[in-house]
Length: 543
Image (tube, rainbow, N blue to C red; front, side, top):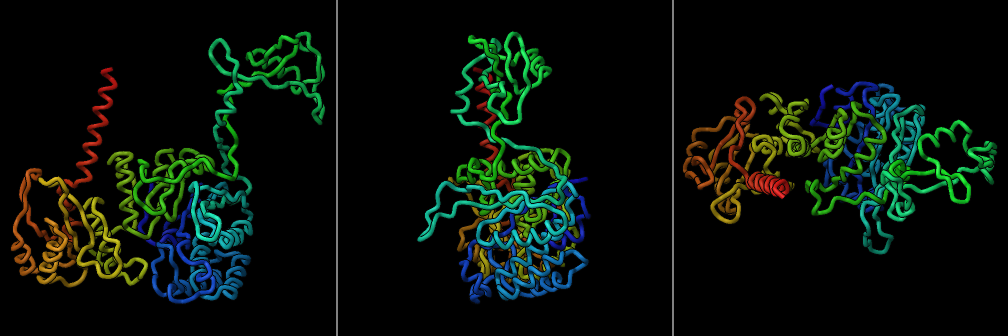
């Protein structure tokens, strides 16, 4: 199987592209609903419900998607829902009413049902959430997994920060991760937490080869369940192991004969795996501002957290699915641990970030091993993306155009509503101490020369040296003429001059693979960092 990255609504992708019982492990970290006032969610006080409608941020509203999803559950779409989950949602509709919280729970019910379908019988499911609605989510998963022979294994508590000063309540510094299996026969690799230094100090004895050990009791005196009574090398006792095991331990050099004539077991430090992991995870810190893996993604999780989950519930070569893959932590860790993977996200910005993350971590060759799905590959699909009516994917065409043309190097403008003609920004090296700015604007409708003049005005206000105007339609002669009046730009770091305003068509991006060919400041910085690393290695070799 080829690793796959899907751009689109995960419900559509799961239903159309992921086969029954094809996935070994699924981890999801969906939007939490955590940025809302809980009482407001529960009581459906309406102003905020109407204020935002995007499904990929921590805000939900009851709309046509909610009505359609509720109908699918109550009518048992294609037999995907258990009687328990149908009754649960019907009951919650009466209790909660059709508002934000019900919209969130309906959304999650639809997707958990599909995740159950695609998991192999030996598969596991982890859902990462916070306490805001975790109690509802557990009921939803119970109604789908446990009602069909699955099993609830753990409610894992991750201490995601050391302290949190909340006004008039206890600090909220934890996340919750639910762990379920599709059947009672599932993949499990026990994971261990290293012992602390105090435990290590118990291993004070050392063999001639330097291996540290401590001794442990071999007698069964005082233990319920009996033991084995015999004499071994002049020592008669009730032993914990049979004579055959005692001889084997002796042959392996694992017996300690005490000065008082006793026999004890040698336990070597190197053989101690650690403490079996419990359900409270306090040893994984969050990603801080200085972390090397930090990408600036607001809900990014540490790689070590996903590494623990993936190692415990999958083996090399298994298929890992993340249906809300965000900045791609699950994908990156799966790649490193030699798992195959499927990632899904509804925003192109996430897809772009994942591709850049994989390229930076594993080299450009890794991108050749990925099958991209849902991303425009021709004019017909680009026009379809530009004309989508789904409010959840508003501005996705602009994001795709900016990030594709810039090879995932530009910064997408996140402002909703008026964007002052800016859909993206990039910075390039100039002759000044500070980097110069490039403004990117995307037009999916009918463009005219006035749009070029507006871009030029925005460049002046933003003190940008270059402007890129990306258009779905062919530019008019007046647009090209107006762009030329802006003049040309060149500095000593550029091999040749370029127009200050450049018009690029979507057709050129798709069919001619036209891309921004200016070396950006971030790449210069990374190149310098790489050179410093190489010099440091050379210095170490010279010492």
